[in-house]
Image (cartoon, rainbow, N blue to C red; front, side):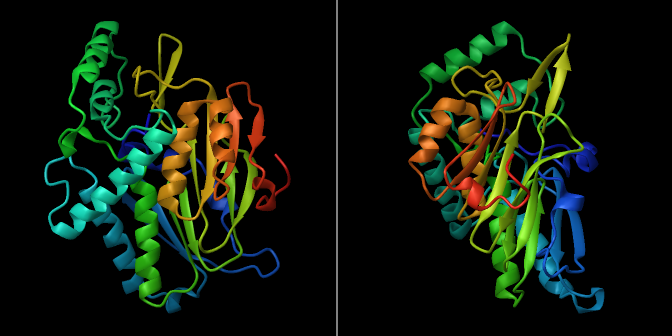
Amino acid sequence: MPRTGWRAAAILVVLALAGFAVGRALRGTPERPEALATRTRPLMGTLVEIRLPAPEGAIDERAVDAAFEEMSRVERVFSPAKPGGGPVNQEESAEVERLLALGRRLESESDGALDLRIRDWVDLWGLEGTPRQPSDAEIRAVREARRTRKATGPLAEYSFGAVAKGYAVDRALAVLKARGVTRALVNAGGEVGVLGSGWTAGVQHPRNRGALLTSVRLDEGRAIATSGDYENAFVVDGQRFHHLLTPATGMPALEVQSVSVVAPNCAEADIWATALFVMGPERAMALARQHPELDVLLVDAQGRVTTSDGWHARVSGGRP
């Protein structure tokens, strides 16, 4: 399923590394090392980081604050099930509709592996609160309700966890650029976009938390996101469950460990990573081949790595 909601603030420190090894893998061009000033703020259930290559005294703090405020606004708009959440004006309603249209397109292309109308499964598994394993009877009840529900429903039935953080990164970059910032990196718990060129992002190894699988070069106009089964998981009676659910069954997708996608913007990288994860290796890579604008790295359940044709042109840390 779509990545289900945003992670809880209680585990911010751990999940700041999910998808990307932030501390040592985000840097400037190797040829011209830079001193990076970093600003962080807890948002969207993760630790959002903005990095700018400038001396501390030269940082435009008002621009950074504005970028964080824009991400906070995005969080409210795309939290329709929470008190005070959802769009409040026509412009924000149009934003929601644009992301819903993107979700519908990917739902069609992925044969239902991506579904933003998944609040029922999110709530059943407690994925935005206290995770729990639902009973078989509970799962059957939701499946039956989904079979008989109307084609469309109220906004509160949707969960934007598969795309909202990536979209928030895009919006933060737009605010920074509008205020004259020409070089910056925004990282929302693994969804990363940049202004300028020569940035490097390290892709987290899905089974070795202290290691990188590889690293990629990011320039303005390209962003990266990773969906991994290690990001939000829990164990019951020795069985491990994670947050990337198959919409048709409500169960975790089990054929993939992680998928990283480089795309023209972070919202698309975010939502494509979720869709391809749930599809499984063969279907995912077949669909990726139909989209040359995407660069994809997939690690299957056995730890085998598959990449799209364009991926290695962006790998700067050696082949995985």
